[in-house]
Image 1 (cartoon, helix red, strand yellow):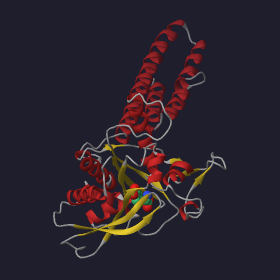
Image 2 (tube, protein in one colour):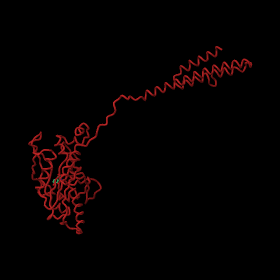
Image 3 (cartoon, protein in one colour):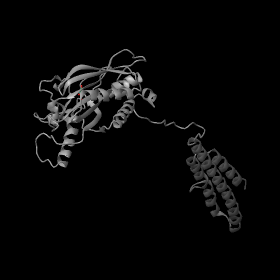
Image 4 (cartoon, protein in one colour):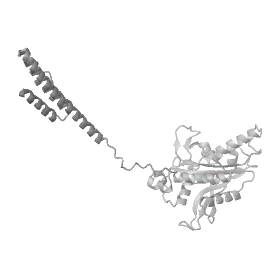
Amino acid sequence: MTDLNDIVSAASTAFAQANTPADLENAKALFLGKSGRMTELMKGMVALSVEEKKSRGAAINVAKQSIEAALTHRRQALADAELQLQLQAEALDVTLPGRQRGAGGLHPVSLTLERIEAIFGSMGFDVAQGPEIETDWFNFTALNTPEDHPARSMHDTFYVEGGTDKAPLLLRTHTSPMQIRYAVQHVKKYRAAAGDASEGLFAGDMPEIRVIAPGRTYRVDSDATHSPMFHQCEGLWVGENVSFKDLKFVFTDFCRTFFESDDLVLRFRPSFFPFTEPSAEIDIQFASGPLAGRWLEVAGSGQVHPNVIRNMGLDPEKYIGFAFGMGPDRLTMLRYGVNDLRLFFDGDIRFLSQFQ
Ligand code: DAH
């Protein structure tokens, strides 16, 4: 029977040396396979007597069981090792710090726009939004801007496809077209309410127009203080008795509230815009701080030109008012002491997170 013991121990050794399931199955074939050593032994029994077959068969079976047990044991050991490897590979280090999300916040220019809306809102101004792709009519013609005005040239303005020769389309160069859009709707509404079906200029009664229109504007311009996309906020107040003194009062009040500075002073410097007459640039001066003593331009303004009042559908003999257009990007730079406009549009989190 030593041959059987030898085979069992040879099988155990072979199984122990098999380091993968595939090697183990190959080793198994050597002993238990069709032409494996145990099968060969069985075949060898043919020549034996019945008595010998009995005892030899029993011994072979015992040996076979030992080999199968060794095989099962090794299979389990290999499967366990495999599982351990997998667990190690997929292990989570629960002591690692979590990934920080950080709190988001509003862009500094958005903070300024919110502030502008809140301040003018408290003075009874409505807030209106309008299209960024404008028609030549609303952007220029209705605003009394002549055909040969430089702003209309290709060098200054982004024209876009989809318009016609007579009615070109462009990215609005300012928020002023909203004066016309808003006023036309307003007049239409109150003309209907007054039962006035005529098409002429409206001289009936209506509530005053008091609106601001913040938004994005576009010009072919790019340096430290100009960006091809920038923000503007338009203001318009039209009524029966709205004069330049109201403009001065409203804008002074706005600037002092916006910059939280009661000793801030304003200068209305004579200027020219086609849609206002008279027109003025508005400069401000801080009494203290790093910018103290310098005049800083913040807006264009003026009394709305009679032609523009007409294009709103109103009779300029009855309705007058003022308008202004300011630059929220500029106001943001002044408020926070930022000296390069491009920082607002670079999307650098290190810069932006300082405003949260
Ligand atoms: N639209 C002018 C610009 O972009 C700014 C402006 C000036 C707006 C005078 C006005 C105004 O409403 O009255 O330069």
